Every structure is written in C-alpha cells, then in structure tokens.
Length: 415
Image (tube, rainbow, N blue to C red; front, side, top):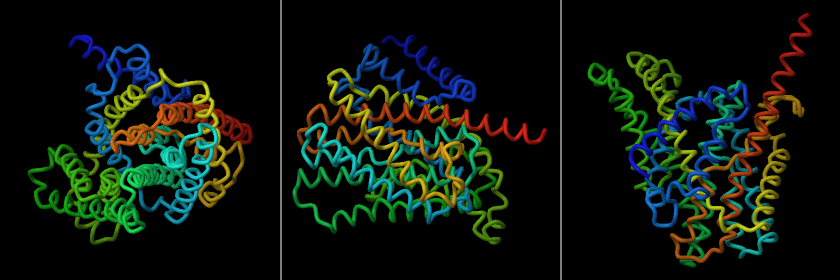
C-alpha cells in the first residue's frame, strides 16, 4: 500500500466513523459492527492490509491496544457519576453472570468442538463478559437512566479483566504446572485491589498537581492529563496490576473528587473548568481512537481456515450468552424496574452482549505460552466476537422501536 492510499484510507475511515455515529438514530446500527466488518474486509478477506503472523499489524498489537484502551477507558471513567452506580447490585450481577457464562460456555465448547478441557474453559471464560470498549461506545449514544448506564459500564470494565485473568491462569497451569491457589489470589489482588489503589492515588496526585500549578497548566490541561493517564497505565502494568482498570479508576476519581465532600469541592474549585476542558477534548479523541480501534479488531480476525462446525458452534455460543444474560437480569430489577420485554432499558441491558478485544487476545495466548491450540480454538473466539456484535446491533433496532412506541403511547395519552 503506497503512502497516498494509506492517508486516503485513514481519512475515509475517520469520516465513515463520524457518519455512522451521526446516523445512529436513523439506521439504528452502532458504528462498532460496520467498522469491524471493514477491518475484516481490508485484512483477512481482500488482504489489502497484511495481517499474517509476524506482520506489523500483529507485532503492534500490545502497543495499539494499550494506548486505545487507556484513552477509551479513561473517558468511560470520567463520565461515571459515583452517585449513579449501585455498586451492590452491579457487583452481584456482574460476577454471578460472568462466572455462570464462563462455566456454561466451557462445557458447551468442550461438547461441540471436542477441545481439551483446559482450552475449552479458557475459551469459555474469554467470552464470559461484554467488551469494555464496545459496550460503553454503544450505550453512550442511548438515552437510558444514569444508574443503568453506570452499571453497564462498570460490568464491562470489571468483567473484561476477569476474561483475561482466568484464561491466563489456565495457560500458566498448563505451561508451568505449578499454579497454586495463592498465586491466583495474588493475581486477583493485583488486578482489582492493586489497580484501585494505583488509579485512586494517581487521581489525587494529579488534582494536587493541577491545583498547585494551575496558572501554568490551564491551557494544556488535557495534554498533561492524558500523559498522566498513559503513565498510570504503565505503572499499573509494571507493578503487576491491570492498567485498563487503573485508568478507569483514575477517570472515575478525577471526575468525582469534588463530590466527595465540601472540603474537596472547595479544594478543587479553582480547577473545575479544567475537568470540563479535559472531558470535552477527551470525547473527541475517544471517538477518533475507538473508530480506528474497531477497524483494527476486524483486521485481527481470522476466518479463512474456519469450518462449518466452528461457525455453527459460534452461533450457538452467542445465543447461549444472550439467554444466560436474560436469566440473570432479575438481579438488576432494582435498577431496571419493570421487567417487561417492551421496556427499552431492559432491552439495552439484555442485548449488551457484544464481545471485543479480550477474546481476540485470549486466542493468541497459547502461542505466547508455547501451547498447541487447534484452529477451532481461535476460530470459535473470533466468530463469537462477530456474532455477539450482530446480536447487540439487532438489540439496538429493538431498543429504537421500543422507545418510539413508548413515545407514541405517551403522545396518545396526552391527547
């Protein structure tokens, strides 16, 4: 690909992402699925971009994903109001559903594809939760109550970590055969508690810096803050915590520190406008980064060597994911209220099944650990990412129809 074509492609993808986002309420399709399909078309299908093993696209995976996730999850955290987050209900729903989904999918994959038990459950837990990138991008465009929005954001970010921890633990056990309960507990502590500590300390430290040097940092508050975001991600990863969750916590604390009590509100009064400045710029940057990131996920998908059995199994797995979520929805009844099929907010909660980067990364883990995994292991993960995004897209149609129907009933009753 020559340089001129490359720049035209970059510009075209950016404009397409904007058009898809702008037309969301008309065509009822979030930009995630079309952008992933464009990546699939450019890479594995037409081979306009080289995505084979050892290519630049594959080599840059750790760096591109780290940067994209840091930018996107910081924005997600900045837009969560802690007063809207029902932590008890959100945690109960999140962990109960992800555990049940991982176990059921592990059994289903074992029976359908005859993979080994460890590989089956690694794939099952790799698909156990919604994407921390896809779901926030979709629900940002919907008008639902803040409590539900905060809960779905919380679920996607927390479970995205779980979908990495358990497969990593399984592959470490296979490769090293000395994985103990203590090492798993240490990993969980690092991912959750360690990430929380690092993210919160970074936020309080950064408020202090902005407050102390506000005369000099006012014009460059976003650039300086995003540098701190990247630093927080790197520090967390280096210390054995989860960089994505640390950045998410950093964003939550940075946005909510003034709401802790009157003292913090007064302390941050001189920099409130900086938070608004950061949030405004971050929204634009997040759109740009996420647009290309969804195309990038599409580039990483591999479909050429997949068979019909794996294809059928992936469709079945996506349906299982959808119905398991429906079974566990009553745990969110205090947030959702009336559990009716026509309730728009229940539709959003039920159809938020889209998987994203985590299954793609899990598919590469056997190579990193020197473990043999058949093509069906990789294919079932990739296909399930596509089909769960299709289900979520269909859900957006149903949501839009339910909202329009509800508005028509309200108008009729008023007349």
